[in-house]
Length: 384
Image (tube, rainbow, N blue to C red):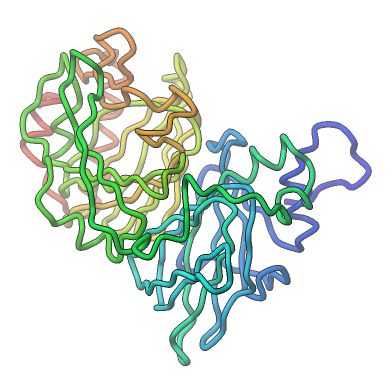
């Protein structure tokens, strides 16, 4: 994306900042593969990066992919926007501090998830002398920059958020704590959220015992979702969170919608997502995905994820939707049936027949291309 420097109208400080940083800004609805997306040298960090602000972010959040060359380290940073990091490849370590003599350090590898405490100094190191390390991070930079419009205040502010990070010895190795929350009070029952400031391997975490959906009641929620299960992460007492979701091969999720900036990163499997605006069933968009694809559904667009590979598909969603520290109601009740006021997930029985027939045919055709048998539970939802 290239900005016209003479255009004074319709400007965003965050986009101007990306230009001043000498980086490319990717737009659109998806990035095909974050593991291989081309990067540029970023003088600020002395690494290589690309900034990403997909259409569905709503100028609330953005992401970036950063690579640390083999045997190198990035320049220390601090900033007045939140940052949630997911490690794509490589192994390294990170130090976080307010005071130089109280640095708290931890190691990470593929699948690690952690949050940088707000406005704390932090520095990332590549522990391999042979291979680069690459991560993707979700940030609240667009919203903070567009409101404040002052880089010095954002990057050179001495304020300490000790209610979030007080340089505790065990900040990055505390035990995981779980708490239940109600998806819709008095209606759809409880779900679990898990609190920790560092997850060394979310792939392994997913296989731990958790609340896995088994029953299906179309009047209450979308609990079947192709035999799926999910895991909700809460980190650093911030507003950014994440969840992992997995669905079996030959299955699909419900059609649902939610607010902006839910960055869906596919970790395995193949398939597609079908999306359309409210009332725009004749304006559908089909987005194919595979391992490494980053997709951000536009705000309030109906969408469903369809797995056409024989293996299961798994994604991690990096999003601005902490269950504890709410900043918007736009991500509430995504799993609750639209038959209940406020619910944002629609039953297939409630989809207009012509639209349902089209969705079914697309799914049948795509599974046939890959030789993937359709799960019998899906037949029960959309009919023979």
